Image (cartoon, rainbow over all chains, first blue to last red; front, side, top):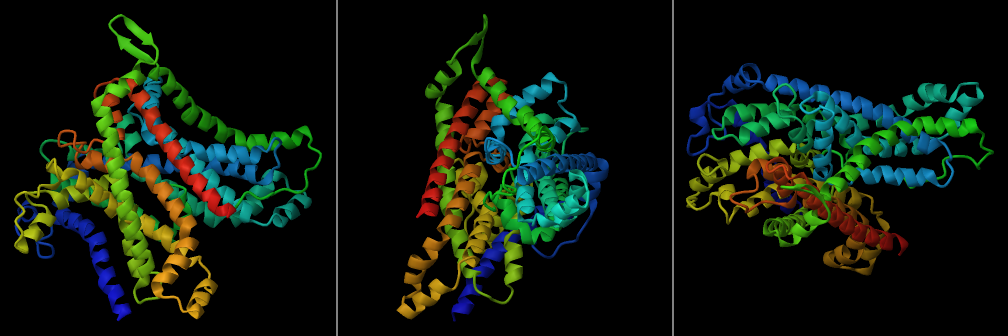
Amino acid sequence: MIKNLRYVLLLPALVFALAPVYWMLTISLKTEVDQFASPPPWFVFTPTLQHYYDAFVTRAFGQYLITSAVVAVTSTACALVIGTAAAYGLARFQLPWRLNRRLSLWILSTRMFPAIVTAVPLFLMMRDVRLLNTRASLIIVYTAFNLPFVVWMMHGFFADLPRDLEEAALVDGDSRLGALVRVVLPLVAPGLAATAVFCLIVSWNEFLFALVLTQTDAAMTLPVGIAGRVTQYEIKWGVMSAAASVAIVPILVFALALQKYLVRGLSLGAVKG
Amino acid sequence: MPKSRRFFNAPRRRSKHELLLPALFIAPALLVLLALSIYPLIYSITISLQQETASGVKWGLGNFARLVSDNFFLTAMAHTFVYAAAALTCEFLLGLGLALLLNKQIRGRGLFRASLLVPMMLPTVVVGVVWRLMLNPNFGALNGTLKQFGINTESLTWTASPRLAMLSVIAVDVWQWTPFVFLVLLAGLQAIPQEPYEAALIDGSSRWQTFWHVTLPLLKPSILIVLLLRTMDLLRVFDQIFILTEGGPGFATETISLYIYRTAFRFFDFGYAAAMSFVLLALTNVISAIYIRFLQAKEAA
């Protein structure tokens, strides 16, 4: 009885969570006639890939997609290298003046600023150095944005790691750097991968900085491209849904890979800024 | 997050070399953050102290003085609080309910869990698109389906209606972020050991008593953390509302982040926008400090 009640309550939640996303997928596959049909055809319609063609071949969404991918991958790589080094330094060396703890907390606190607070000055700074409407501006900003997250995630993974292993390597005559590359990094590889995926998701989903810093077709990311279409006077619903549906794909693949680390990462504010 | 332990052996005599190495590891990160988090804040302070006037730039607290008498700013603040309070309440209650329902081993649990997480993984822009399509008064799936059940949808224009727009954007936030509350609380529930429950069972406590006296107190740290994180995000909300309503119709859903954006990037009044952003920053800092104090009180108890 209680058990059945559970399902009675859970099934509507499931439908409520998934139906809107499903509806968008159907719009991206429907002809204009079916899009505006009443009552709404949830299941029976003639599918077409026309909107995907329009979005990614006729319009510039293919370019936005490439920009999104380049920016996400490059900024993630930069944040990982810089952040992992800092995390290792903070986790494995005893610094004077209780700097380990102080620096860690300070680094994390920079992540807590509301995005709009830094968006205004960053826009002006990027304008001053003539980097507005470039991929470089987004790569730089996202690297800084992901950095505190990388430091904290990797700090945790390094701290969980027994130190005997690398000390053995040090005794064997390996240098610090050698021990790090040959012994420590392979051991934290799963954590490193999870951290990377979180950064990729954040950069891929990010909207406000991208909106502020990029307004040209050559530099804008997928979210900004989609948003630009939404707020125009005449909206091409099919094209927009097609672009949005494509934007979801990498996220869903990543999310599956992340199940195990989800709570830890999300508690540090991954996924959204 | 693991507590900061002492990672290193008893402090040894430090040579210059031993301080140089950690500095090389840590310095790049510090430089990046100084340049792109701290410098922008300082930059922001300086522009917030400048006002453009006909006779040139005037320094002072003028931008901050304007805040008090700016009805748009005060209304945007009020909207932000209404939005945050309503969404936080709904997300917490629904998320807790779902976590309790899924805390038992039931058939299809993995599927439920994975599916419920979909909304929160989506880019916020996509969430905006999804709900534009659902809520559109003319061909949206929601009104279309309601019509099939014989409900008159004439007045249900959702995001286009001054009366329903706020309700709509709150509902969309609840849709997207209840899964997050659910996930954190479920993890919290699963970390609770079995013994207190067995003790409660022996004492003959009712289900309700067990929930109130055992589950809730033990879940408190998770609850506080998730409320803290949600509050921070809700106070700074921008993306979904920008896509769904752009703050409209009129000013009906304009929150503080949207108003700052409009001031800076539509009216190009960067000084005033910077001044407002410091109010938002101070607000989020005060609220997070209060939460953290509660958290530490719990840890000490």
